[in-house]
Image 1 (tube, helix red, strand yellow):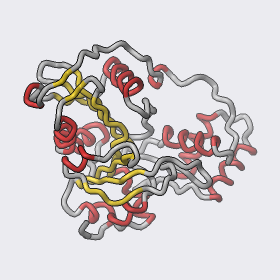
Image 2 (cartoon, rainbow, N blue to C red):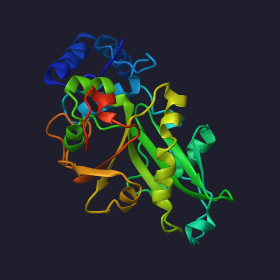
Image 3 (cartoon, rainbow, N blue to C red):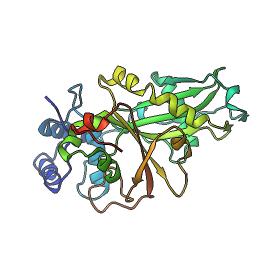
Image 4 (cartoon, rainbow, N blue to C red):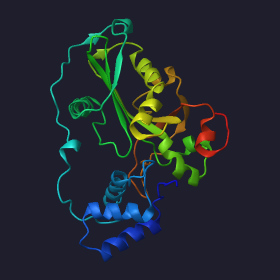
Length: 288
């Protein structure tokens, strides 16, 4: 049986309010679990999507659609970012000097702490806890020197230019969105100046990410996406790594319901991982 992500309509918001009014003693965890069970909101492994549901609730609370009960405790240590000290000695050379690079999936708690610290301190967006299925990579030179970090997380719920290329219906999107992932963070450390390194890293990762994802979550990926702030970046490394530009965003957040604050307009790039990815995602064979 397939389990799909619910569309957060006015009726769904009213249902959440009614649940909270009827059960004033429920804390956030109980509310999230009840919503997941009632809406049959589960992942491919049949586990309830508790983390995704909590993000949705916090988003509605921030927009004034609901008022959540106070959190029982602060986020656990697994979500806390501690800024560590790092070697920032300049690395300025041709790419052949750092080859062959090594790309490791972030798995251990110790490696995750280092990964979060790098992104927190050196990525312009900082570290934001990735909700739902996600994977992180650390990139090293041939001698083990850290060069960068790459993070993939949940694909955007809605993006007009991407959705037009795929050609899926809303029901197909709800079913098959887990077979996509978004490159939410891509960081080459600011002290690393190695031409062509970024596109090389992307090219290496796209060849392995579906296998890594299957090992972690039990299902493959068919399509990658990323969003590049057009007033800040040109998307050069994505173009060089053969990602396809498909349009730009409207300036609304990925989980917005209505009336959310405007965000920077971004160029949208996608990278198919399988031939005829549209057929995989919606049953219809189309061409970009």
